[in-house]
Amino acid sequence: MELVEFGVLTDQLRAELVDDEVDPWDSAEMTPLQWRDKQHHVGLREQGGQLIASAGLLVVQVEAGGERFAVVGVGGVIVNRAHRGTGLSPRVIKAALARAATLGPELALLFCHENRSGLYRRFGFEPVRAEVRVDHEDGRIVMPMHTMWRALAPGAAWPEGPVVVRSRPF
Image (cartoon, rainbow, N blue to C red; front, side):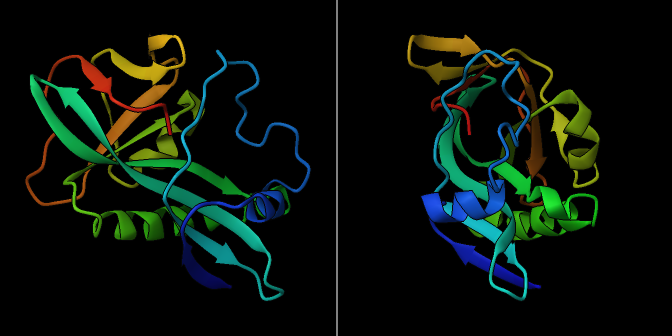
């Protein structure tokens, strides 16, 4: 298996990951969200060259605790269904966090389903306890998913207070 880095997830690469799965991120039951494309990706390719796992990254501005600052958004984490349960999620998340630490911001932020928060806790993510609002086509909405943060630099901490993500969710 080969670790690869690339930019935007093209339609061809998305097709390799999704493999005709109807709802690979389990989001059909949620309020329809408009997801933002990630600018950087870390992935795993099998020997035949197919992309079988990926995590996306982008830098966005947030406001929290009366401060405005940049964070690395982590999103679109996926393992092709034929390879789920084989330990690839931790590998791709670990690689994505290593790449995130090179992008500049001292904090990472992600949105996830409650049943996946344990996976991200293993990588040092903690829940954001305040209300989180994100940009949406009709203005700002309260994020219906769990929001979690993680330090990317020693001593970095999430400020208390309501959060506004100045971006569509990622």
